[in-house]
Length: 419
Length: 94
Ligand SMILES: Cc1cc2nc3c(=O)[nH]c(=O)nc-3n(C[C@H](O)[C@H](O)[C@H](O)COP(=O)(O)OP(=O)(O)OC[C@H]3O[C@@H](n4cnc5c(N)ncnc54)[C@H](O)[C@@H]3O)c2cc1C
Ligand SMILES: [Zn+2]
Image (cartoon, each protein chain N blue to C red):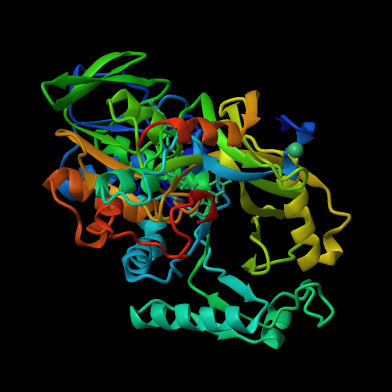
């Protein structure tokens, strides 16, 4: 019987719910492991899970400085999609989409993956042409994507201002129906439980403060809970990549840390059963199963490690909300927050061996790494286990910037805040 | 976030445009040193703490200014005209 099933719920209900096990243990650190994964976000946890499940490497520790899920995995707005333009990205994210489609079964944990679609709206003929190009590129690699007319969009989202007199009239859109949302906390908890049950130690409140070396080679980490050694040390610290790399003596990276804010309103009746993006600015919105509208916009636009942003961006996001949905003017905002994003110089991620012997690196997720949680862990685990890149992530190297092999999906150049 | 413009005084961040990391030095335009160009274009120190950066007071006097700002607290520690720095750089032999 699966740990969570209708039968186990019934059985435990009769037993007064006293027999449930905690989803993961709180072990003491062992002195050595085969692999240490630094960072207990979505990517670190899924990496540990696939190391144990796919490669039989279960003598693994996940080291997290705060509590599990305190980083971006618990701060994002949960949009999952694969509609990128360049094949290096779209193939990788489409693989992730396939893992998402079976994730609740895989983990025996309901991650509430809901394929409600993600719609990008176009406001100029040039934008519409660009979307058609991206849609065709996606269909070419076997991912789904369809163009929608304004009339179809109006039927799908009645609350949208589709009038010709809107400040930026909507003239069509690109829809990916298999895209959608998932419950971010459940993804972290599901991977954590799956890894823990296979023997992985999840060490919370344990901050990596330095690296242990033998010559050039990294052979472990020093932490706030003592020294821990390992044959391989893998980093998945997202927004803190620059800081942790500095501990390893590497003080320049093709990454800037920026703050991204997000917002949630009071609960409303069903209002929006898809995720929609505004093409005239940088804005997107979805509705949670609880009823809150979850939305966000651009980065604040300057380097930041503060995990909070400033008011001009709040004002901009609110004005975009009203440009799209004038009817939301009186809805109350419940909360806003910020997260640390690891903006790479071409907007694409890095998954690679090195750059030091014994070290493995996973970073550069910008503000879009939640959707990659399954595939990032899958491919990173492969890279760690076999000491070579997974074919799907072979292009995501760290030295691609200096070799002229950037993967710049938006064509923005090396200005990270614009990706 | 308030940024002190050396010319206009304390102003709201919305009046400014971020021009990015101010720790980089552009190689001499006639340089063919690929490593130096790559480092200039792609590599960042990205510190958690005091960061030297360039802003333009685009909604004000339009001057380019060098700001030292703490990326953990957003507090500005110092600001000065960028042209002062450019003049100083120019005096250095190349
Ligand atoms: C507001 C917001 C909205 C977003 N919306 C979306 C979205 O809709 N769709 C999408 O796909 N993506 C989205 N993202 C991006 C996504 O959340 C991130 O790219 C992704 O979560 C990063 O991977 P992670 O989960 O492993 O990161 P994190 O959860 O941040 O994990 C990194 C962990 O490393 C730990 N750590 C750091 N330093 C140390 C140290 N020295 N020692 C030990 N541990 C350390 C941190 O505490 C943290 O828990 C959003 C991000 C933000 C901020
Ligand atoms: Zn000024």
